[in-house]
Each structure stands twice: as C-alpha cells, then as structure tokens.
Amino acid sequence: MENWQLIAVLLVVALAAGYVAWRTVREWRGKKCGGCGCVKAKDETAANTHSTFIGASELKVRSGRES
Image 1 (spheres, rainbow, N blue to C red):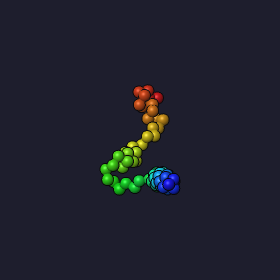
Image 2: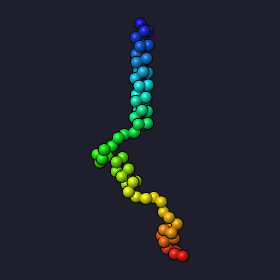
Image 3: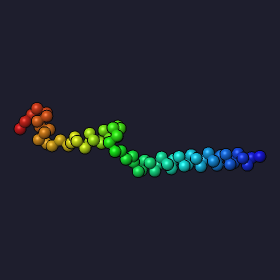
Image 4: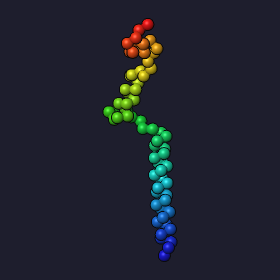
C-alpha cells in the first residue's frame, strides 16, 4: 500500500526537476525577440542607440567649467 505513495513522490520530484532544468535552459539560451514590441526589445534598442560613455571633454562642458 505504500508503493503508490513512493511512485507519487517520485513523480512530483521528477516534475520539479524537469521544471528547474527547463527554466535553466531557457535562461541560458535567452529569448529571441523579433521586434515584437516587448520590454526586452525596447531595452535593447535603447541601449544600442544611446552611448553611456562620456568623454573627458564632455565632463568639463557639463559641469559648467570649461578650460
């Protein structure tokens, strides 16, 4: 009679392990976005169009002190 409990527990553990493996593979692979308008696509587009590097000459201009 305890045999069905063992089978049920093993099934639940196997499903949980499969879910963790599936999520891990999806995280490593990443999502492929084809410009569908999702948040990830907008963030990547914004990151590619704006430079975050500020040169030394721009720092002087932005602080209001020009040499």
